[in-house]
Image 1 (cartoon, rainbow, N blue to C red):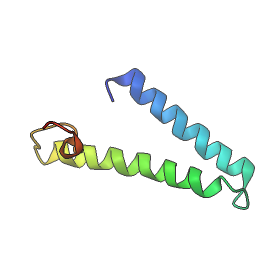
Image 2 (image 1 turned 180 degrees about the vertical axis):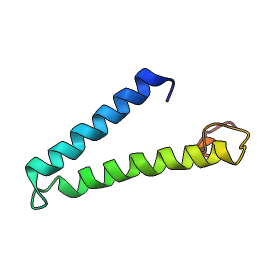
Image 3 (image 1 turned 90 degrees about the horizontal axis):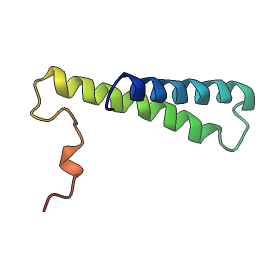
Image 4 (image 1 turned 180 degrees about the horizontal axis):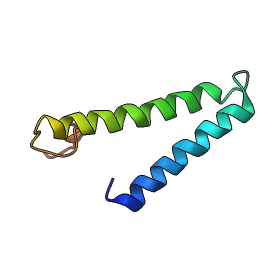
Length: 69
């Protein structure tokens, strides 16, 4: 994300989804979707962190998926 405001927005969305999972419970049809989304955000952040930690050329580990040509 671009900066602290964007990071806070993502964190707030993840927190809201986590809270919603508590209220709707595992029997709700959207529960698995919320679980996947909350997990995916954490995994994506970790991949970006590891990319930067390893000294990757790009700060975004998903640059391979861009259509540059």
